[in-house]
Image (cartoon, rainbow, N blue to C red):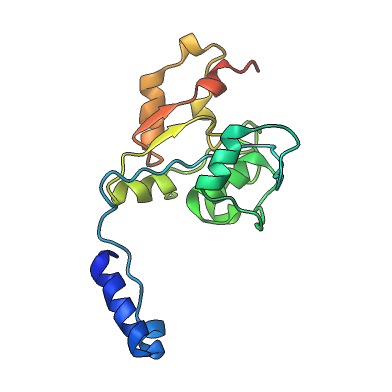
Length: 177
């Protein structure tokens, strides 16, 4: 059942009739498919503080804050980059993702491709899911020192095993190590 006009009309009719018990008991069902033309842009940044009011002009962030979702009361599952990313992208705790330290630590294995990510779930819902930017959940996407040497076809195959159809990490590839 899609949450369209019929659902809203039925809910309005229940509210008008005063049947609040029926409203509370009625389950809200997810739509069978995403609305046509609906895009999701998820932006994740590292090492950035939240300011209710920024001390300098940041029009892009202000636009996102006004038109998107800002989490003002949240807790991080980990203060370390890779474990925090693993919980955000999978919805699972670090003991289930297997990521306890940063991906470039000698003792940290890559995240298993058996762990389902948001990429898998969004693909199942019919979205074309592309990952752009720093991955930090496996070292196999960080193999070269210069972007010109990056094996993009190989990187795309690797990211597909994590549920994403496409990959670009220009920042990661161009940042000196």
